[in-house]
Length: 390
Ligand code: ZN
Image 1 (cartoon, rainbow, N blue to C red):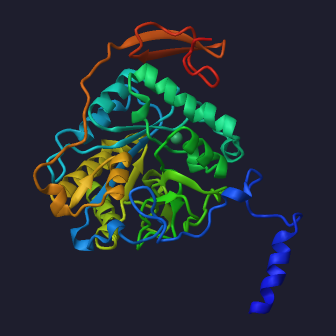
Image 2: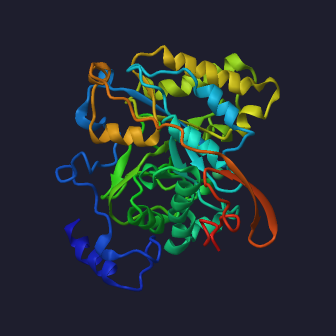
Image 3: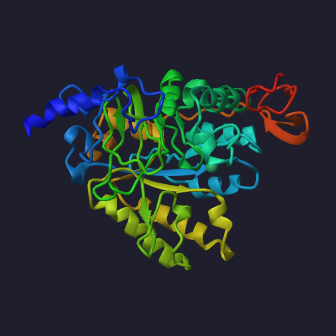
């Protein structure tokens, strides 16, 4: 086999040979395969199905991530309030969810409320442009305007420190390759929660950093190929519907039961793949529209019953994306997590006087925006004008 190596080197050195990587690839930062010796916690972790910190599986917390995408409005806030209320993790800290917010129609006084209750407010772009090629081909500049500027927008209008806006999810889970991770790193984002996997369902893929090449398959290319230190990926482990078809978002699963009890059984089945496996964090990823799509809200009923069930398990923690990353950086056993003294994640006092403003979007469209800003902006915040001051 050695005789082939010079030939391979020769091919690699021919500049005209097309590479599978996107055009922004910079050879000097190309991510090498992970070096387990060099890549050590808290700031580096190879992509793998191994439990971080070599914690024994029966003393590893099973994390469940509840996420909700798109605008937060008076039309969906009550689902979030009701689903989350009065729920505690086994350490007696309140549960946390993660909200991926798109800008249009969002009521920022409600975003402020969710943040004050200890949930992760994460970003899902300003425009949520429906054309997926827009995201696939997005330049770093476009991604900066969609996400870095959105950080300023949400911080100002929801009155949240920029440092608390830690994660993103790409619209339609359309990856943007190296440009996406360049943007994440340059703007101090902590994690991405857009990258789906069906290859690593059981055993599941644990979160990892992007310093070295990921083992995760690329289902919605382009995926990153360069090295990015201190940027975490929380893999979206796919669910399977009743016909065995995989789905990245739970509300994208087509063949699902139509009674509350059968839905609950299905949710438990999917949960148990991780809980009886390597306990990689399980994601329950939906839009509030899924709750209302069928009569009598049986899905919402099943969802609450599922959370009730999780609440009976002494090693299951419902946490936000940033809390999962905090744990992975510094892994603890369930016994350590539930032993005194316990420091719960911070919640923040409400500090928002909701103000409704009638604004003009891009010079033509009327939009109402409720926010914590004391004065109405000049125009409806939008791409290239995130604070609405132009
Ligand atoms: Zn969306």
